[in-house]
Length: 153
Length: 153
Image (cartoon, rainbow over all chains, first blue to last red; front, side):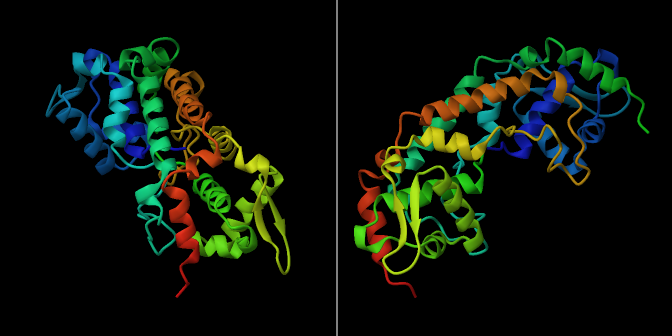
């Protein structure tokens, strides 16, 4: 079972910002490099997070990305739900099937599909009580800062 | 969020067998064609399901795949858990990262990872009470039979 890469990245960006020191707000390029993803991919996720008012982005000297209060207290469940969207956990519509892309003939009358949707909802619900601030407390926070300070090769 | 393709296929194979008429047990090749997947992929999943004693496979005339009683009453949650294994829902180890395959530097001290594992467990647990027989009752059963009867082009 895998989350979308954009969901994964959104979580990591917020975690990274949640531990950023005030004077060293990372830029989108910093984040892309730290997460080892293409700049365009990071920029798309950052734009989405900005649209959701979870971070602010300022250009120029002293600029960079800053987590908003709303971002710090955002529910991880709500965030994952928003980034994952309404997609099925199995390929009912044949979007990525073996070349042919044939939709599953059962898709209109499948009890499994509904059960899998409920299971997905249970997954999201389990993450609902957790905030971005919660997942960077404990050992993760200091470690993230240490990583940020490591000079790049 | 996506399940592995083998999990998806395992569920469909069991559903297909659960509605098979006694004299027309499908073969692995039939199943592969009906599900529009490569034969080798179907054969691997069928072998795994046979190993789990959820189906029997007989060669030759009058042979084919048959669901066992254990297969009919198998928990969908247990099946999905078995096929999904212990993998992370995000790419902590960098196995499929953007070319470089760099493991996430946080993986040893990440509170998110544990939370995502719990969420995955909530997903499985939600499917636990459901059996293979359950998901083919209702409209899905008759429809599956209709599909099986459709002559191939």
